Amino acid sequence: MVCRKVAVVGIGGIFPNCKDLEEFSEKIFSGKSLIREWDEAVKHGKKIRSTVSGYVSVAECGLEAIPSSILVDYPEIFKDSLHRIPIENLSTADMGSVWAMLGTQDAVKMSGWSKDEVQSEQTGVVIGSGACGNEISRKSWHNFFDLGKKTRFLGSHNVDRSMVYRDSANVTCLIKSKGVCESIGSACATGLGNIGYAYRLISFGLQDRIIAGGTEGTAIESFIGFDAMQVLSHGFAPEKSSRPFDIDRNGFVCSFGAGIVALEAYDIAKARGANILATIDSYFNNSDGSGNMFAPSFDGQHRLWKGLMGNDTARLFPDVVKVHGTSTLLGDAIELFSIVNYLGDKGYHISAPKSQFGHMLGAAGAVELVTAVLMLQQQKVSPCLNSDRLNEQPETFQSENKWTGSKEPLAAYRDLLQQHVVEKEINRIACLNYGFGSTNSAMILSRDFE
Image (cartoon, rainbow, N blue to C red; front, side, top):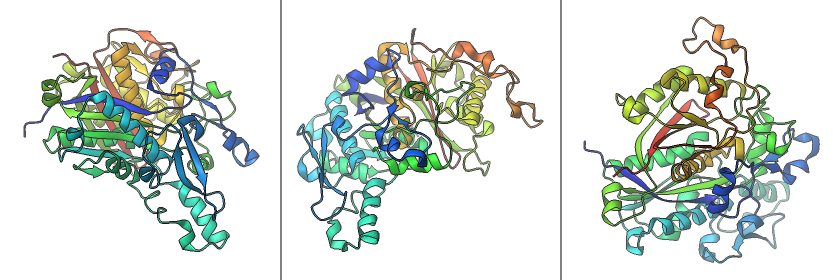
């Protein structure tokens, strides 16, 4: 099969503590943290250990939640105070879906696609999220089960505001595209997984252009599940809470947002004179095969790199590796060792975007891919904030007989992990994301060399 080259021609999204993509880019490359103390978590007192998040409030994204006159604490609809989305599209959306629609509008505008191109049978939508309308569902069930409200009081949009593929459904209804409309769910690899699937659809000639990405609407319901697992960062000031690879890391910062990209067959984009932001050189995904739902696998990540690079390591060797880098004890160490095992320890830098805005769950891979595109555009490597001290002693698992990776401690790779923005020539970036259920995804982006 002859595979087509794929271009990124538009990006958009919703980002914590930022009014738009421009402010997001400015803060990322100024080395600023977007993480704050979250009042919604704080108000629950000692029932929640972690109280920080890279969150986006309803008001901050130009929305207003209109409460139901019948139900208790139930947002009947989100009103767009900036008049970007028609009311009929808002009626079927939860907050994450609204973000997906807003990000799509920005990405489509940047792409330069015409109305006919957008509404073509060759234009699809592939967007996913990690959770499933948790806030809408919880408040519906509370009114029905606890308060005894009748089902008809829940209104006619409870299902479409909480169904699994609501994000793609809302976007395709907004832009009236006629191609595929799907959502891929792969936990914290969802954002990159949807973009990777979209890439394959275009590459294999099944679609000419696709809106793809991930979104995760702000919801305390998603937050508390991870807090219950005791995997969230706590005990640090907000801006110091996300600390990938640091010896004192104790969990990730649960955050929210959306990242959307417009992908197009390269030959079509080139022919119409599009501004090509990046090209996708390779995508690969796999499973660890370890049988462990949560623990990362060195073998699985080694096979991921092998599948991503194939027999073309020299051509595809990245200038930057954008890591998953959640700030979990085992995850960070395995990831770093898997990188140096395959690439060596020279010739590239590591970027850890979660150190600046936390872990956006189903949106993580998509927002981080947007960040990677910005790195290509700016020719700057985003930093690994708060990696103040790296372990100078080997990890416990490095002494096990079955361990086949580096015997050096994390501190041996200090030069790869810079806490400040690095300006350098960047031609190629490898993006990594992993998720519960032993799923792994990786993509290589490059500048347009033609």
